[in-house]
Image (cartoon, rainbow, N blue to C red; front, side):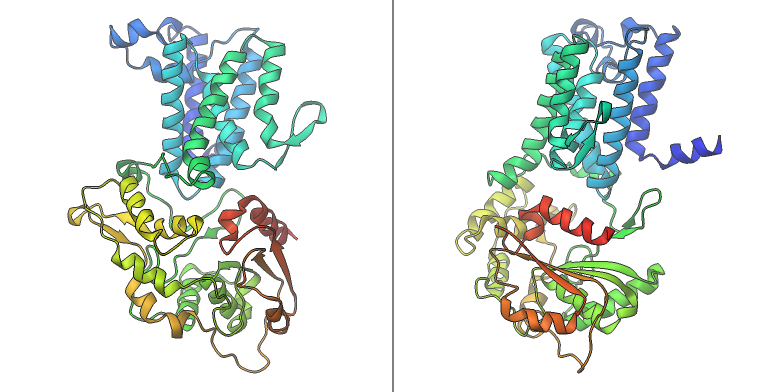
Length: 452
């Protein structure tokens, strides 16, 4: 019993509640405690008799009999497996965003169910969540019946084909695929591939109840992962001082505070240089290092990016406090476009624009523009002078963008001198923001390196 309790407590909260409610309501209906006629989705009793629980129970309930039991168990398996993966992986630090995904998919399932007169919505709801996971992990190999293995992007369609052959539930599968694709397109595809704004943003009041996790997160048997905001960035303190020496001091202090003896580290651009300096000055703290599109060579290394000009342009942006976050980011994008030609770069900069919940709802930047601008030439553009002979001998992976000039062939000798156990990999067709432009390839490189 203790093993079952331990397993149950390890299931992420939204997945645990969803699975428990599904199994509980279905079993209570099976033994006659809950009347089935009051659990299904029907227009008239929902709105004319105000039986407002029906849209929720229609998603959680599934009729159990000898002909449906296996299908119900399969649904529970997919619910548990793929909701757990989404909640504990992609949304592990953003529980509010995962709750909003479930809410969006549930709401769209109910609307379609009312229009198409679909009384039971467990199938489309489960498949919609599975579809989102498959789109976010398209190239991951999944296992299916009889030893079949294929890419995750094909799994929803395999399930659709199976339902067409084994049952008459193909319409439910099609609805689930449509709902899942609607969420994925509005949340991810439209902003990143078509250059539009993010049309699905989690409301502030949900974030208030389910705030983002800013510390370390980990699952059962998985080491904790800490996503760190550098000083003058994000939620970390804003100070007048900003240099790689200061950032390394911050990291060492964080190690002490969290009781970390050694860790694998990863950093991009300025963060990559901070992580390089940490490994070089405190090699005992670093197991493996991943440095993304930056080198330890003197200077910034690129002639294509005028960061001080970007910072000045961001300081000049003015947005009325009554604007929504979507409107504000559109305005900021239009104003930055006069200076910053690259759309991916503008999108990255605009992620730092937030709306204060107090102080009249004014917009602000999460980065300390003044400090970064005043310290740029001395604290960011130049890598610190190192003591002769210093090096980090641990495994190190440099990931560079194929279209970026931040890591150049002339930098390789210095990289090999400071990091003798290093390898350099270029991601084809990626610019400086490798991790966002080629996220799938980037994730594979990182995971393969860490798992070696």
